Image (cartoon, rainbow, N blue to C red; front, side, top):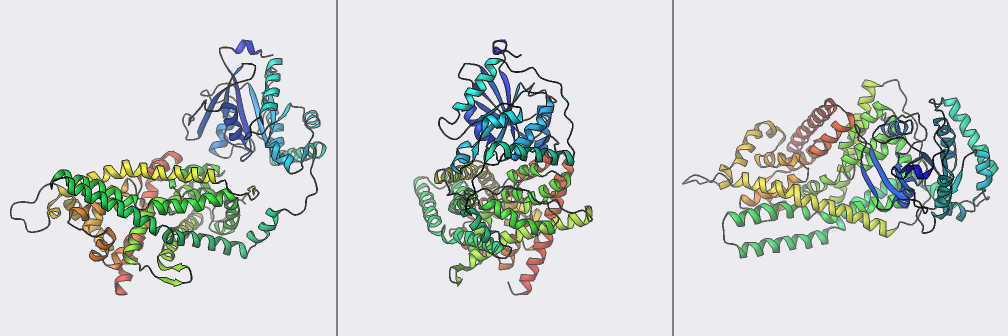
Length: 625
């Protein structure tokens, strides 16, 4: 027996394990509160969460939140970590004294099957039925004593998100520890076969039949809505309409706020200009910092509206339905159904999207998803798209509630999705022609009213991240571009604008012969170089270059006056494909474990960007643009 007194100097190690979406992380937060730390497991990029807790009897615990898994068979990097921790193969975690197998009380089957498999690991187990309040609200009655007796393992119920919902769990956990945990048994675990998994599921169904009573409920609201939303014809149309409405709102709803922010920036620029004498300091602040950062900050309302739509649809429960609707299309392109989640995440930022590809079991499917995730239109592209659309696309209506600018924005997002599917299809034809993509298995949550507190918190976090980026990366890049655009000073008797004699002009003219076939001027070349740090930096770079050049009108008007329509379209197409983000390239290197795949993504995306921009530029010129 393991006496708690013998562990006074070394807290008991408790690991939480369960299937995805069983409420395990909420339980971890309820157990540990703020006493937790997050990092990565050594050697891999899988998130590691460890926290400290103390039982009501004063026994210290170290709680480890393991990545979600359905089995220890370990088909993905996350599941490999979970398996290795349970089997004692990771020395950076240490030996686990107690396993808390977390099961969703409304859907016990995966948790009970997993608990049966974990018996063979020889570690003491406590089965926790989480979200018991939801089960009771739905009229589901669970006889804990019968379940415990049939399962042969201790069972406790909990509600991790409600005050007092942890009392029963703390009581049962304290009782187990107070009695002394059983000694670890012999480890007899072997990876179960498909037949063994099916047999374990049947056994879980028998346990549920003995201990759980579910009422015969009338058809729920979720089922009624899904009959329409998941309809093979109506479902895709609804998804298309929602996405189209989102991009229309990005332009129509954000316009007044963008004008207000732009007016504030103009006022600040004028106030600083009036306060400081003409010279390098005023140029640095006005033409460098304010012009560069302000040209990006003005797009904050559009970022907020886009994320507002995504967060509300996610909280509503619609995003899982969108995954099912997209599964058939993605299957034809040779993508695993689970690739939808990483690709959807990449609309916010490719970095978390690439990292979330860990949910895909097959290594080659995961690699394909990682390589195409940067083609999704991330939020960093929005300032570039908005600037160029505002400069070259008239703000006119082409139908009731349909604006031309919003339609073009929708088309750019669609182009990113279509190009990703085409790249995946080509990859499938070259590497895995005769294989069939695995089907998508995903639980559909019930629809629920979005919690505005959570939505607003999510918006605040994304707005803060955008502003922090503007205050750091974009600020520094703007200052660097201003320095390059200002120095060296023009020689005596110079007749051209001062910027033509600067380092920026030298760099631009050096790159111009390479990019001039796709219509790029030397000013664009200058902006693309710092734009490798982050895509939206290119807007700040252009703003700074034209500010130093002496332009006094808005940046969009400057571009419309100095560029042809063919150049504007070419740059839009360039940003659909080009890997203008060092963070994305770094995370590809880290997640694949090889620099080779990072360079593959660089070559194929720059190659696509150049070829498609070349075609777009010359087609537009032929059409008179």
